[in-house]
Image (cartoon, rainbow over all chains, first blue to last red; front, side):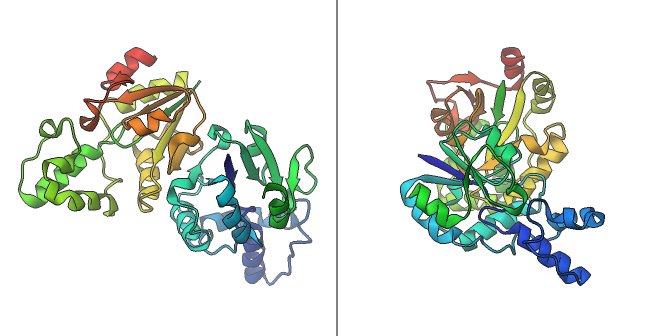
Length: 172
Length: 172
């Protein structure tokens, strides 16, 4: 059985990185809790472009923290499923190598054969997709599972995983 | 209708680049004709690793020549099909950005949303795959088309395109 797992906000904490960079540079105290129900920039809309530009900074994707328990649970999932990491990364050319290296460091048990960097996920053929973005899940032909992230807490209509312990319970 | 098109040896002339690099460095006169029916290294088996190492040289993928008529025919195909470039590039981390930039230069009409860099192509869902490697075509669930390259001239069992003019005749 083929299981696709998204990167940003599912195994890599982009949300936390945006908040950390913004706070460090602006002396603010934005918190994850405060951002619940929206994107980070919506808390500071006048800095929307500033926050977007984080994506183009060298090192942004390379330095992300893994999402809690993603490593240990995925290590078990690869025993049971054919696991692929599938990231819509093409918009950020500098991210491609950084994402590859990040996986080498944090998920060395995901072979390069099982990594996909694409622009749009509707071309994926497989059984399960875990993703934080509903637009990716809507076009997937298999079992679509929404992984909870601050921006999607009010999204309905999908099977949902709140965290990786939840994923272990449901998929192992 | 979704059409996946491979990069190396379908729209990008890796074969020619191997021969050119080898000849320039060894004072030899290897030719494409001479390599028909096999891989480049099979003509100089004692240099197998040398030729393999070309893939890891900065600039190798960035400097490839487009395959004859691939640009003009693909420009027409994108009007008729949802065209995606799908390259099994994950084995070569340095190639990722180079391939992206190469597409920006030579195929600017292929949007980043329509680019896929992966490890294994059996995860692709779509209607047609044009590829020079039979192992990619074997696992594809749609119409599999072999694009002629020196190494596959003796391969049988697939619909075949000999060149991009042939592709225009068949697919347009």
